[in-house]
Length: 302
Length: 276
Image 1 (tube, chains in turn red, brown):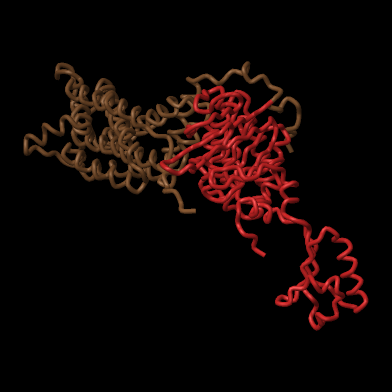
Image 2 (cartoon, helix red, strand yellow):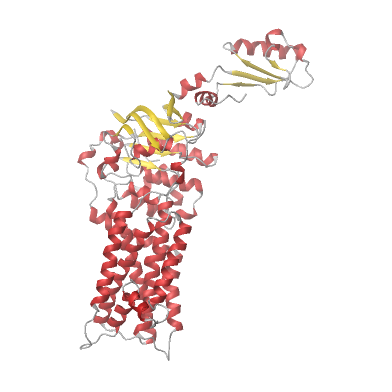
């Protein structure tokens, strides 16, 4: 079953095409991350899927319904979290969730949702005094309380500290285990890597990449060995196989090759022979960030 | 940890078309209660809607008595401050924060949310007016009978509807909370001052006539007439006041429905194309 179908979607604001001929389908249960720089059309696409904005041309179906015509029944089957946190500050977390829960035919119990977002201890806290990360989780709780079949998350962790982001990821993961289809927009490549089965990269309103995090990583190039030369080591001591990878300015070896194990063996054998300690040695997988920057056409920062 | 992987919890496995949506009357009632709680949980609502009018009532005590006119005007002050300023500014704040947009996307019928906000405001505004008059009755010998109280209640309900409906319409075209504060106050004070909320104005005559067609003076006048009512004193409520308030309520509601916006004003949506 297809949960979301987008066909040749275009949205213009004046002479700006915020979304320009985008097509994709999301099967039921998939977690899709939409990546892209600011102004790429991520939020506009999401708002069209949520029924807030009508397309200039093209068709959109969410749960087999045109979002602009989605009635109460349809709205009870989707959940959403807007880009900015939007909560009344005056009441407690529990009172807020209880009210939203009462709108849906098969809502989670408030205690269940509080557990999912890890806010059980703050049930009686007023929303207005929560930290930014906690408020954002309440926002997500409202989005999921009706057991949505499709959940839209617009930059759910932008502006959160690393710990709050981990909490948020855990909450989304628990939800996706229940089979919910999720569309999330994000600036963070690691977020897409963590949560998504599939990644779409938008730039200037068009899809430039539609892939999985693993494949995207593979497009980032081969794995890399980095190793600053230990102090006092003469560059001329290096064997020829390694010397050509040396950046003389930074005195760092940068080896990107398909035969990483061979290069690593040479490097370690050489260090062993001379009793050098390679304290700064790094062996890294190809960076998803590089693949992303390549996809949106930015020069790689090397 | 909640086991959310159990089959019953899987959305795909539930036949959503046979699950009944919650009934609308219950949802409307719950939403009115929620909105009223939001208003009362906000300290400013209580201080402005109750504290200020009661202080102005006490400063007008004469020989231990508060007249029907003074009680009615101070009560109308609390009512209008709540149904106009407090309500209007909060509505803009909620809209610009995306709260209305979020509610729009829920299965709550949109008309229920819209009505609940207005009805909850009317409830709190009428309560603010009633408490002020009750202070006069209980502490300062303001005359009242059961019939009079019913008359005041009717005038206050109509008055609150007139102010809240008109505020809903006006705030739809105000883009920011800051502007809302300034515009609501700039309209409010001239209206209530010529209407005699803080002291009667008798001259010039045309000003008095104008005020009788605005929604503040009929609330004060209607409530005063009701408080002074006794058997054989004429009608409980002046028809003119009721008609003016009903007209404002109805006109305000029609304009509010036509103009209402759920989503924040976002200048960034219309940004010019970037040179790239």
